[in-house]
Image (cartoon, rainbow, N blue to C red):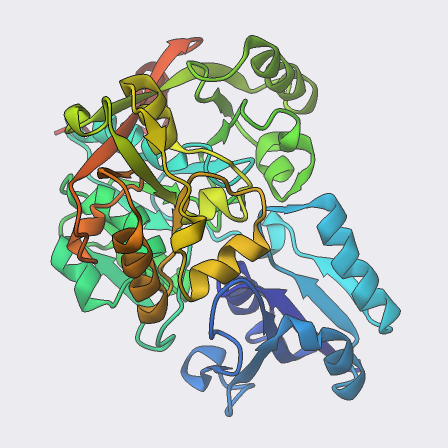
Length: 448
């Protein structure tokens, strides 16, 4: 049978996993290239031979996605495999049109082709959009299981933007490990809330190797928790699937890929942020859950917000810094920091645009919906410096940090700062604790 030439389209995450699980040792295909977008400086590199396997002794080149039509022609490509998360169906099919117009087939790999089976029970936490509240849901689940005496290891969706060989399997147990592995702000936002609570987190590039390491973690492992990224479905076959939805973006649960896959395959659907969303929007989301996933249990939850220094907000002129991905490709105009500012009586929220420098100017040009809020962009040293300079240039009384990490640990801010924290609190429907009790009984887990 003739070997098919393949390009995998992605952003240093699902694309590598699809290769590792479906193509790496499959001599029916030859992956001639990856294309990359969204992540600065990822293109122009190679997926290294150490990860690519025996069929690829020279590794696999990574190109900019802008070159896709030319690459399809020059490399005689038969198939292009789409491996992005959190794109609208319009954007997905726009890329499909580019691929088809260049002569190649357009392909999506599903769970049966890419999910790995664990020896341990797996709980997956996924979402229908970026920024719905997966992390606070994961934390709540882990804390509940730990209180019951179970050892939980979290495995986080990949964000490998550095040395891919060195990042094959990463284990995070302390904040110092974040520095050891040269984590970006985006990575720290996901890992730090776990490790500061004493929980182990794994991530990296090769999720088969990561799974084996997590199952055999030196501190023990009773349960694997898949902590999802964007709106991607789990890399591991879940025994309990939980999907989080956001009524601030009603209807998006049926309009973005692969978030709708998460919804249609979930056991539990959590409508988060019901304390700050209009009832009409909550009803839309609930009706869409009942239509798309009629057997799933529905929980309504509040995203409870607290501030460590509320006196820095009341009566002050403030700059709000929010989680980057939530505001950018998540398309949110606000985050937890903005909600905290509204509730604590700031006199003015400062527009950061007059003070932007470097790459942040490009970010605001690419995402024109951003208003009176600054996304914490930090994929590399240049973006970190630009973020620091922009914050320090801004004329304000205080900086409100709505990101999941303490920004003052990674950049120097020359103004008073206060952090915003947010937790999941169920207010209607089944209680997560009861759902976990049933999970424990079903899998006959031994409590300490």
